[in-house]
Length: 248
Image (cartoon, rainbow, N blue to C red; front, side, top):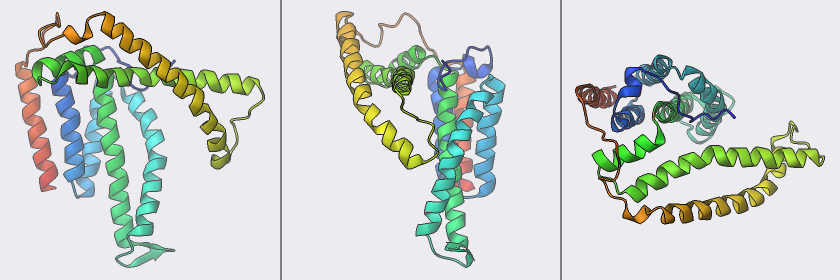
């Protein structure tokens, strides 16, 4: 089953970088997106993310996510125009200040989500957790919790699809065009999904404990994650990117 955060193997520089450096790239783009105040910078950061995705061979996944984010961005624009009423009127209740604020908020929403997905698609979750423990000295239990939560995303998605297929076989129609009707049909599915997730979480915790989870330290990983020259150069570029976000 297709999952948007599945790791995509590759031999590009982006794949070979230290997982912490990849995390720094995503963080730098996100921070610069929040700090940027011009359309040129916001679009440039979005274009940078898409170019990195094309270079790493995950452009299709970013486009798939972009299709999901665009409607949310448009909703954000409408909500902002409803609450920000300064400036000259444009059409209906919308004003110039509301449109500017809303459009920038929509671009920020898209620009924040894409870099994180890009980082996850070019990084193995085991490498990400181990590198955070070794390089950033994050306690292993926190790194494990973060990566395990990401691993459960496709599992829960599959569980939800299985429940929906079972309900469809019983005559439930989920193809309704009304979003309110679809929400009413989806809400009852949260109960069996929650019961299933609790069972899986308990089984995972028991398995981890039996394998000596609490005995693991920073030196327990068999693989090392040194910061190389490429990582240092990219980290310097991340700092410059944040500086550009402040300036523009």
